[in-house]
Length: 280
Ligand code: PAF
Image 1 (spheres, rainbow, N blue to C red):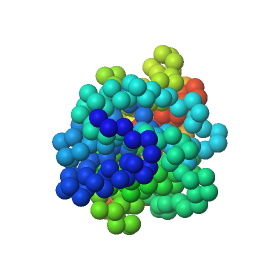
Image 2 (image 1 turned 60 degrees about the vertical axis):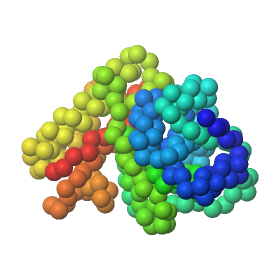
Image 3 (image 1 turned 90 degrees about the vertical axis):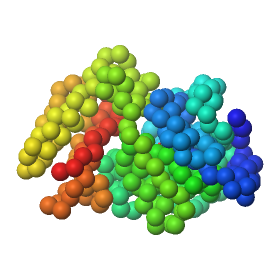
Image 4 (image 1 turned 30 degrees about the horizontal axis):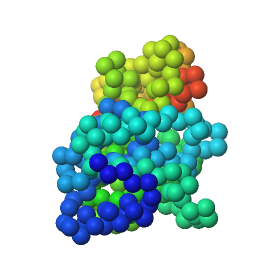
């Protein structure tokens, strides 16, 4: 497995692969890899000749009060996991390598990125789309795989790819859960045992609300309020619970088919997100 630390060497290698007619599958990550990431690598492995994994804790998607400094990192462990799952290339730039000191260009999606996490983390998606656009130009992928745990991120990136004509197929991958139902996340590492068991309320509340909404569309608002109360009763500080049309990321209308019921809540100082995507 090849490991690149600089943008230029990585891009050079990717361009050589393209000239040789190879297809490339990219899995962008912030490292501290878990089984959810492994499922993304497996999907890329099944699609492309060459699988690249980027490992970069991207400073531009963290607000100053967020957890950039303490975000968990385990480079050696990540390399071993990537090798186990057949990745061919790791791109792991140092923070100072990824952005020039006087960088002044952003890539920003201004519609789908606004609600949900975009409301509580107003600079988050701008950081994500900027770094992902850079990763796309460096890695030259034919496919890029993103997990649906952050479904909004996936939709925003699909929109970026469409609007800016990146010749890349975005592959959304199913959210992966632990056996108890908690959505896998590198941030789960922050949770105490007690917080972790109370955090299971997020998924439970979403499942209950989903059933209620499927059986009675008119019950949407009540089901959402009930879900918020259930998470709060378990000790969570609710950021949002909301249901939106997946296509528009706006309030569902009579024409809406696929919807996302999404939640974000703090347990202790850890902010967790989860969602259910379904037809109404
Ligand atoms: O989902 C993530 O881990 C990050 O937002 C991403 C896509 C790697 C961009 O930094």
